[in-house]
Length: 335
Ligand SMILES: Nc1ncnc2c1ncn2[C@@H]1O[C@H](COP(=O)(O)OP(=O)(O)OP(=O)(O)O)[C@@H](O)[C@H]1O
Image (cartoon, rainbow, N blue to C red; front, side):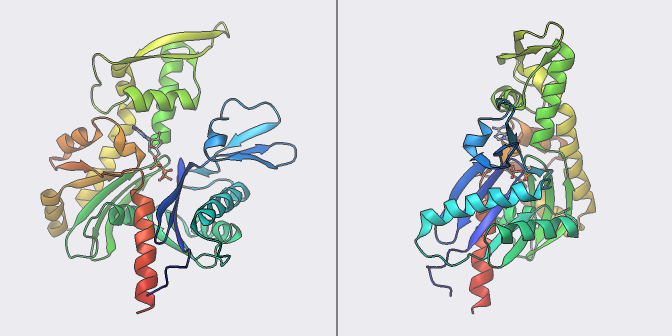
């Protein structure tokens, strides 16, 4: 077995959030995947939470960037810088040891070879010794305690910011999967478009995310819930306040929810019958921040006829699974 003094890490490099799991410690960093840079010099002003608070509020010389898009790297240099910051933060909390860590990073299952190489290179530049990748739904399944190594079908649906990953797993491998670039960000965009069309009101992505989290849902939406929001009137150009109902937000989210359900259905259709039967018995597990959308579990269950459970630590599952995989990988290498 490896000694407890190595600081090997599992990283859930997400479109919305990056989490770092340190071997023997658990999740020690949990921050938004956002970097604020000075546009003229390119120097870093803030990373993570501090940078997210700047989105939509930066003066001309500062840009707040999300370097990941649809689960993959959209801006290589900024991603490497952001990872370096998070790796340093995780190491500070661990020990004074200065050895480079081995890192396992999760990637979407639909990633191309070029996109995967970019993730590995960025992680090396950020300070890793050896870099390994793990497919996100596999990590999500391990992190939500599904029996991935056993000869039984486990189904996981990981709904993040950029991608929804649907997979059926058995005997330590993904048997069938679907990765669609539709998830939380698409929900936020749908809300922005809805409010723009219905109220001629321009709102930012933080406001639309807040609407989604506070009153958003799959299905019809709560008849009594609503929320007051502020934005810029596209006609007068002035700030304006409107009240939006939960039912309106549910309507705005309907297409995104339908795409997620379709991905679940297609994956089930492609599954070998024995595994599909296991899933019927054991149910579908939802992970990722998108799994927390109200009623999503009920609506998926109604449409598929299969029980659906939201994982206990939905937002941490992928990072926990990545970390457990790292522990498994290095302990089995040393046996
Ligand atoms: N209570 C909630 N209801 C609905 N959506 C939520 C809730 N909490 C978080 N989210 C959404 O979950 C998404 C982030 O989830 P997560 O951190 O799992 O994604 P990620 O791992 O960064 O993305 P990806 O896996 O696509 O790269 C965001 O779109 C966020 O708005």
